[in-house]
Image (cartoon, rainbow over all chains, first blue to last red; front, side):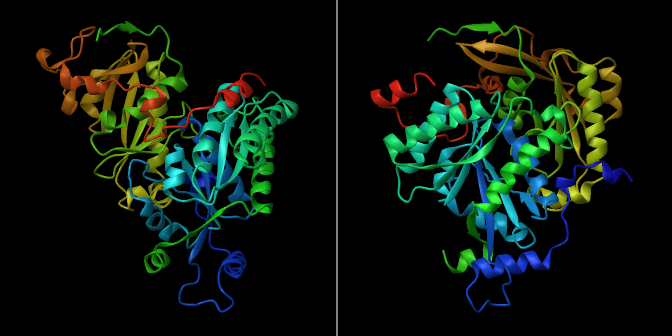
Length: 231
Length: 200
């Protein structure tokens, strides 16, 4: 069928009741209200250095879904000044997905939405590292500072990725007192042209997704109904 | 202020992608928004949504206009065959399942463009020129055949190479960091920080 030509990330898988139960156990009170089975949605905001990096969030969403964490990509209206714009966005998608991937392009959006966690996609060059530092400085200027994870994009190898991460992490710790979490890297050989089915590309994305899950690196968003009741 | 305009000798695909994202409203009409900056298909076209909630595929190629057209047609076919899924994934489409539109952007018009335009009501063709205006790269977009009229009145067409009149100035979309959406008046670095980030 022609539909099978579509990237699997575009498909919504049926809800896994076990997974939903796990999430409910983690985020609801001891006596869950059965009338609202899933009032929180784990959202992972990604602060892109460049809109062209959106293939990374797209593929991570696909990898998470393939590994049983049904995920969707949600796009925020970054031109809107209304910080409450997130809850209506999640009210539909959050109820059937394990994770909501939120690509954003400005640190101002991250601050406006009061995200507790954010992943920065940082190209492996000194200018981009400096710009990432400025963004972290911007985000940490207002308490509470979000937890920040770093994914290096395009280093030559693991050693190179580590050098860029160390430069950034030492700088933020020294001058801003902000620790960073190393979530992995995508080497320069991994490009969108490889296609989502490429094994090499999938391996790196899988490592990143596993680190995100194992470190529980997400922002717990209230979905629409709950947000209205508890603004 | 002196206005200095030069023709950009070369515009990389990724640079062109950023410029087209900035010019989304010019390509797909007022109120258009970006849904996907890089579709995972041949040519990696953009996916926008217009004010009437039609998905809009923007296919482009700076060198090969035929490739831009064919890649765009393939993307539209894939989207059309999976409209239900697409509408589920992108909440901005509001489950209307409107048929997709195609916008093709290339430096030269694809061969037979007049005939193609006459047959395809949902197709729009744009010819682009990459310009450097006072040091910043911008895009000059010329639509071909408004309302799908291949034979536009001569006086309605922009004159190639001319300086745009005031309303057309909006077609220049700069790539400067300052023009990215609402970013971030990022804090300045202290001299100590600057020195630290001088080298790896």
